[in-house]
Length: 364
Image 1: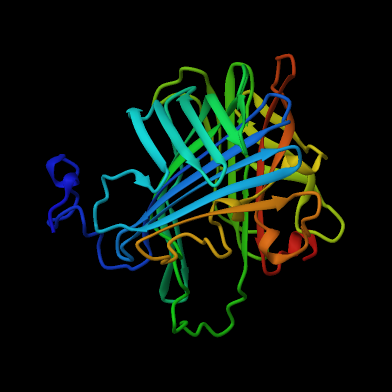
Image 2: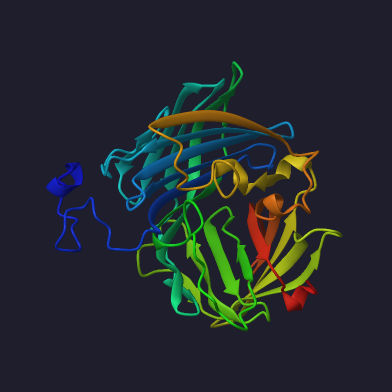
């Protein structure tokens, strides 16, 4: 099965690009977000390819005035992995690893054109590898890059330019994680406690970026974590990379699995960096990840037919944040960076959170 990708020197197996090994859960995904400097507006995009399922899907979500407006699109891939479009949504790689554009042609009253330009060379996070007993649950690589964002969004005929100062984050990940319909037969794992703990905090400051993530088991033991402090313009081998960061002072909002805030500690050669993270309180400052396919009817990899496009509007003020479908969020946050010998800096970022199952350190 030859496709457009086979005319590029990107093969990593003896097979055509159309085939991605033998695991049905193989995926290849883009993610983008962007937000106003005061956190008053937000946009997010996801675009995924699932070669073994022969499906591609794309999602755009725009937050305005306490509402999350979502456009979902899904198609049969036909094994053509170089076609970065699904219905009205398309991605253009203008300059690899530096500048990309996302366009949503008007559909269901929503439209946008957004350009994401990297602030430094992307970081490569430690490879994510996790098994549930004998079965691979996750095995993937991810690059992450903070960006400056320009362009416009449109909701029901009202077009708004992003204005100056918009920043955000994009990532690219590929490998294996659960996608599409659940497997029909689960693997018995006696004694296994089903749980998943995830925090991710890409933060934007005036002249640098800070990145933090942690996956941990139900006892709080990290199985993948890293923090990076990266000056603007940094190259592939630059910046400070720490393998033992700590998120402290976390208290949960009553009745939810979401943090009121936290303090990130990053060990440095000259001491320790301290970053306070304080989620904004407005309803529009909480982004529900299901708006770009993380769960729900439009979950990643779901077969919707030859082409399906649909709109979904979410009232963030009315959303039950204790409901399982809303556990996975990104909280737009004010952040303050303190480094030894430097004046504190303020900035903005997101605090992504997902806690599934028990998590002993937080009393869940």
